[in-house]
Image (cartoon, rainbow, N blue to C red):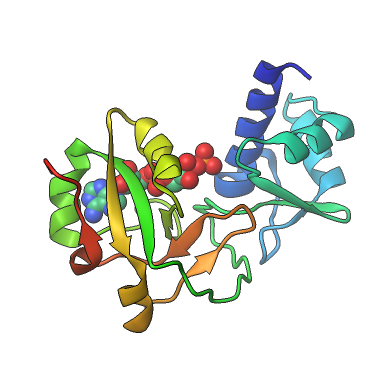
Length: 182
Ligand code: HQG
């Protein structure tokens, strides 16, 4: 499968499994799952032809393992804006987690901390490299460190998605460390 096609399929799946299932008449269950047959049929009915093999290939090879298959069902592992309960158990985070953003957001983040914005949770990475890539989607990346062990000690709940993204509802400013120059 050509890389360009794989990216197109991945974006299509992200859009409909995270944000706008209703756009193609799909309904996700509580956990965010949908039958693979239903997804393929709904996509075809809305002009996007996708084979089972392509779907399996994208799920298996996706750079961030964004999607998970369970038997006959598929879901996005994280990143939703629609209301789903991924059913992830609370997890103990590593001492520090990282968040990639850009300079134009920093002043507001200093004042109010990290907020989930359109998504359910704030997304944090276990390593600086990943956070740098997340920030770089929007411009020159700025990486913030999060004192996750202090948050955890203070009762903030963390979850880790199937693809290793750390999720929490919000990060108050006192747990954030800004890199030099910001
Ligand atoms: C910023 C992609 C101002 C935040 C990525 C970010 C990730 C604030 C933006 C995943 C703020 C939200 C998530 C505040 C947060 N004031 N700006 N108080 N609090 N922000 O896309 O973390 O490819 O919803 O810094 O790789 O960038 O889709 O979150 O810039 O893993 O699988 O508001 O999405 O993965 O943006 O990215 P997003 P994110 P996928």
